[in-house]
Each structure stands twice: as C-alpha cells, then as structure tokens.
Image (cartoon, rainbow, N blue to C red; front, side, top):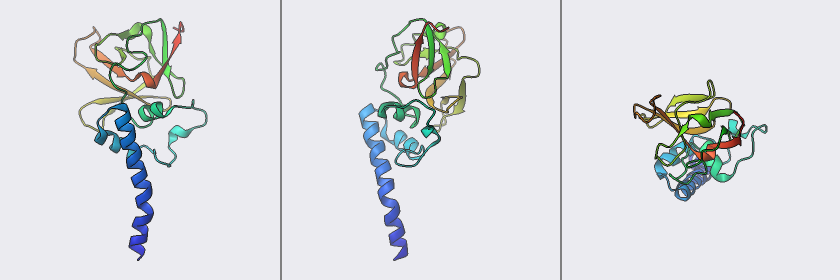
Length: 174
C-alpha cells in the first residue's frame, strides 16, 4: 500500500542518522540522547547544511561532530585545555578570530576557558536543554561550547567553556 511504501522510504535514512549519531556519541564518550537529538536536527546523515559552504575549512569527523553536530569533546582531552601561549584562538571552521590568549584562564573544568570574547565574534543562544547558554561563531554558526556566569572564577565572573576542536591557535597574533 502507499502508506507502507512511504514509511519504507523514510526509514533507512532515519535509521542511518540515528545509528551515525549513536556511534559518534559512543566514540566521543558523551550522553547519547542529547547527541541523537542534536545530530538529527543538524543536517548530518546526507542532508546538506549551511556548514557545507565550500569557503570553510575541511573538518575531520570529530571536528564536524562538535562544530556542526553541537557535540562535546571529552573533558581534559583537548589540545588547548592546558595551553597558554600568546596568540589568538580562531574558529576552526571559518578562521574568524574568537578569543585572545590574555583572556584565557585555568578553570579546572577540562576545557579551555575564557572570560571574554573578541567583541562581536561570539553569538549567545539559549541551549536546547533549557539550562545553559550555547556559544557559536558569529561568522559561520559553528558550535563552540557554553558560557556560564556567576561562578566567581575571574573578576569578569564569566566562563566561556570552549571545545578545543572548535578552535585553532594562531601564535603571536594579538
């Protein structure tokens, strides 16, 4: 019947998206249900998203999971967590400058932390979980992490908790 044929046509792509999301969540060690939801809405699984702009830098599967799928790298695993050279942190996807090294601090949280972004570089959005504030690159919409306030870790009283996979470091370019 027509209804059965329609469901059969939808089922394989949906199953592929969910299986891919589950594999990615297990590989990165995150909460599978959160990532199933975010990846199902992000264009992963064959649909083109705005992240497929040919002007953007190519990304590894892990970088796509974080930047496009709004995933999170495991705590204390990122290359910039315990890294304090002078320079600029730029968006790994589009090269837009995001943070200065002088605004980075050790929050002991497992991810690079900054108490200030470069003005106009970071967009703040309510997270789908309803409890946190997500941060994205203003230029390309790539997921960076989350911002927290009221922790009193710096005089600015703000902590941008950013995935290392979302950024690349440019030495000495203040």
